[in-house]
Image 1: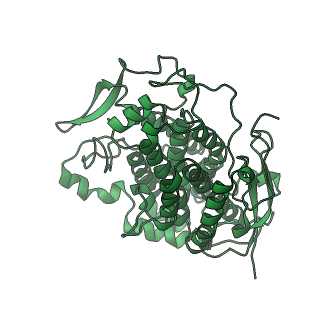
Image 2: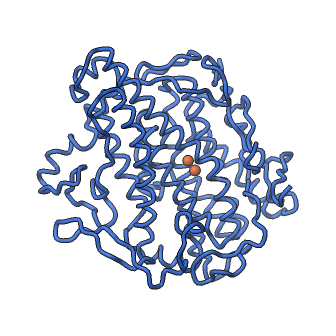
Image 3: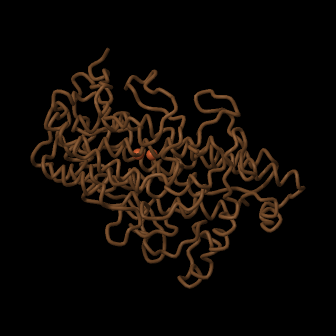
Length: 482
Ligand SMILES: [Fe+2]
Ligand SMILES: [Fe+2]
């Protein structure tokens, strides 16, 4: 068995980081634990805390068979600290320290920068749980309810992962940051979460699927970049988190697919040839595609803001220091120093979007965002395939990257989703054609009626193709507490 695959499952905190032999760390984590449970009960999923949920729990870090499925009450979930196995002789793959052995401790000169990266990543994990806390009440099926809770408990575990690194490697500062991660709340005017998209509401299940498709995918990109880190414990932590993250994006991708499929079936059955005949489509009780497009426009643009400024000296410094690499850095064939390289950056110049070469080191956020957008395109292409197969000419699109931005070169730029540049007043006047309106929200909300009978689904969403853990169609994924 490779080093670090053995998981200690006996104590309060399952782990493969030798917690039993590190009393100071164990004490710090056990001190933090009650506050975490308070947070989970007070700000995690509303209701269902006594229900038995068919959850997957990480019990190992071997890619084959790392998880176990079983019925668990969420507060009893075994949130563990799990690092991917150490890579023997791992060396730093990029930046000024390229070729040196990976660090097992934090170099003093990078302490502040690394701590900041951990806190920003850590803050997103509980934030999404808070954003999703009321969705249980309107789940379209027990299958979906279970998937929501699976995502939630794993985001909780990701918080544990970052808290472990803070408490083990950053002393008192780390312990204070760990407390603050439980103190901030999504959308709280006095103590908001750190990043904008994590203070937005996730008011309905369409938003949830789009959030897990778009925003969890940003999480994946960030984790993948941090998995390249010279700081080996961070690399190993992120590599294991990525195995869980894949399921979150699956929930979003297949969730939207099922919504689209149901809409197509209903339109066909009703003899509707024009998907933009919104009134007739809504009369069928399904999500019309133009509304889905507006919701996509919102979630995509909010998520792009998470990549920060296109040009960033922080990103350049983090790269040169070896703290955060590029997406799949180890698969890229170049010098991994980027001192002389350039990268094409989309900028907003005199009312036009233009591409200009910029120093590649400064443009790392832009590059990560480009990698992200390319992945999103694949998902949208899959949805469009279903629309085309049903014989409709309608196409879902990813909006222009300059649309509806608050951060970066395009902040406030009056660009339409299709890339057309408008007068500011014209943009405002068409806002409800670009982004979900109050009426869209009210319609979607009217669809959100819970279905809790095993094997049954709300009329606006198709059943999944397969069950979780190969369970049959009528499996009772959540057993409600009386
Ligand atoms: Fe996460
Ligand atoms: Fe996630």
